[in-house]
Image: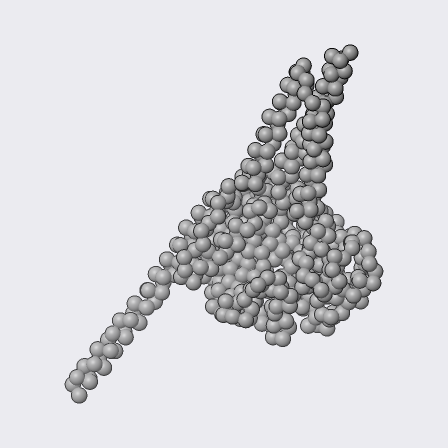
Amino acid sequence: MKILKFMIIFICLLWNVVILFLPASKVSAEKDIKNTIDSYVETFLKEHRIPGASIAIVHENDIFYSKAWGGTGETEEKVTTKTPFTIGSISKSLTGLAIMKLMEEGKVHLEDPVQKYIPWFTLKDKEAASKITIKHLLSHSSGISTYSGLSISDKESKDVNAIKDNVESLSNVVLTAPPGKKHQYSNANFVILGALIEEVTNQTYSDYMKQEVFLPLGMKNAAADNDSAYKKGYLAGYQSWFGIPRKSSITYDNGGAPYGYITASAEDMVQYIKFLSGQENADFLTENMMNLYVSPHVQTGETRYYGLGVRITNPDSEKKMIWHSGSTPDSHAEMFFIPETGWGGVILTNKNHILEEEALSYLKQGIINIINGEKPVDIPSNTPIVQLVTLGTICLLFAMLVYLLVKVKSKKIHKKSIWCISGIIFFVLSIAIIPALIYSADSPWHAIYVFSPDLAYLSIGIVILFALNGLFSIIIAFKQNLQVKYFNS
């Protein structure tokens, strides 16, 4: 009995000690995670020369981590977690949410054709246009191509009718697949949804989003039009030139709000993540409508799917993640929520380049690894390899041009055919460079120019040098021909 009593007392004392030190241990572990995130993020921002960033991480509806770095693009104001950034294609998630709200109110239906609500909407193929449904648009399966979406994007319009104007400009677009048959990520789909929201509600897209989405979710700094964005504190970011930030020459686009120009702060996005968790603003959507919103509808990769405005990875496992990334010419953002663990987060940055966009996904995954107690992924290098190779090509072509200029003055005779063929090849290459770039990138020239301005100008330089080399090669060919005739006579 004495031994039993002693054991009970000993266990009670041991348990009290464990309880006493458990909170301290938990606090210490959390501090270690936050310090690791600090170091990891700061290394990333330094390597990628990002002037301003804001990050927030949520765990089980509580803010676990919140921090901002650097300054904004125009007045160099200090970035805070309240500073609005353009969130790029994460805007599609919020536009999708607005459509879900209208569906819950019975104002629209998922399988309805778009023309039921905007009868003036049409495409080159009138019959095909009549078959496009709201679900097709939300899941990017309308048949409208990525290229067609980019052709109406980033127009810097300040017009209040910019969304409708964009949709009307699609009237000559040719579908690249029948509606419902193929997933093609296209900004055009969500511009059309923006116009649909305006038609159904008899409000501007911006007003509807403010009253029915932003305010109910507690997104106090969010905006969906130029004037409101700047009033809330938004400032343009930076475009990347050879990896170096340069203040953006691209301004806000009212016509792009539904697919990519909503502005929001890290604190705003925390509210959206809390909504995704189902623990806050649960009355915003019914459970059935919420499940429909975040369910996979179209497969886009081995483990990747697209819902109704959100991306889903590993939907049938404990690793399920609801997420979206987004970019504009001068910003890049990542947002994620993992239902199984309750972790979610948002990363907002104010610098972008098409060749640097993938890097931020590594930062996202690195942060997820850290909070899971795993080793973070290696931070990718910011070396602008493609630009440097292109610059090297320009230097080579310039050296060749100098050589040709010397040959023009030379009296030495060479075969005309060699110079003629060389000149023709150079001219063909000068004509083909830009179309080949457009084809390989599946993007119109305007999109290439705003998302990779350094490459755009380097490409123009290559075109000019190829043309000049072709011209002087032809001149040499005809000069040699004249010299041969002169000596033969």
